[in-house]
Length: 215
Image (cartoon, rainbow, N blue to C red; front, side):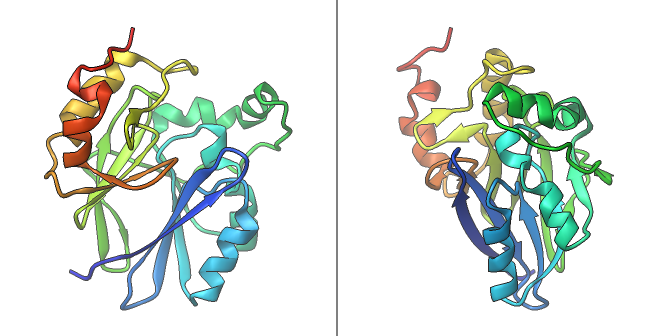
């Protein structure tokens, strides 16, 4: 199985990481969590000569879905989302208002992400793991020595749980069950900030070592 090409594009006022994942043999690509700067993200797809085949959403908070509508207007592709985050997704306009922003409703998702059913682009395949806690329908995409984890686990931190649908105990249980069972060498591509590895976070992340306890 070929190794994917992965491109990280930090963007927007939330400094959210959108990821492009491509099969080098075919140029087929998927976009993970298109944020605010959808034009710049699509320009990167076009610059590389890739064929966008899908949008995969790790969850449906505003900073991860703001660009969905613009992307599918430019290039109609399937939109994949876990059904438990559909209420968040359908309330994009209200989410925007919470931050003093305006956003039209996003186009409806076309496909449901289901744990145990892989996501594929070209010959590249990722296992889907359900990791609630930051949001009810948060998912992680695991494969090729990597995990695209959305806003569940960061370098030195974990996802916030004070937004609608968040729960601290659930988040930590998700990390324990679905992240810390991965090899230490697994690269963690987070929704914000730099890449890290499972081993680094297992040994140094204060939320996981007990140095800092969430209330």
